[in-house]
Image 1 (tube, rainbow, N blue to C red):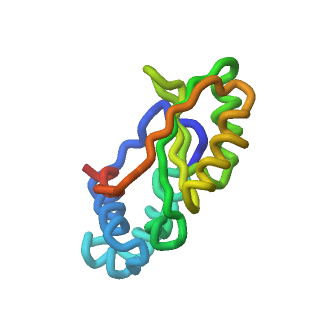
Image 2: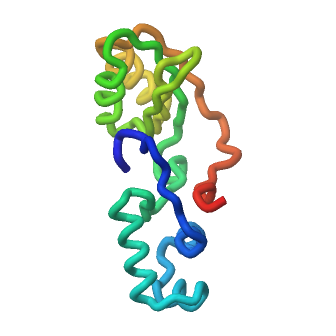
Length: 157
């Protein structure tokens, strides 16, 4: 997805929402199957999906459970930053351990979610990379003990 948040939302019609909802259930669903379910031709579904992908409204990805693939430590880290917030966010976004970076209002300037192999990896990331990054003045780490809910179907409500 684009690094910047869109300033104006894309308006989705009911047909595009139906396609997205079906792909959220099964990202490998055949266009012919989706077409039958919503009453369009396969070519029309293919075209709509391509437009949604091209406009970055939609991504089709495989989502894994980090713990099951060797990443046993996840955390949310709040950062206080001085100077160019966008520059710090950009540099953090380039790190492979960081799943997302969001600018916030309130107690923290940035929130980052990290996915690490273990506590040692998290400690190394924090002490050697995040806390030493120019502009980062303070961090607070919230370690995930158990992931209770993670959903991706909010896009069609």
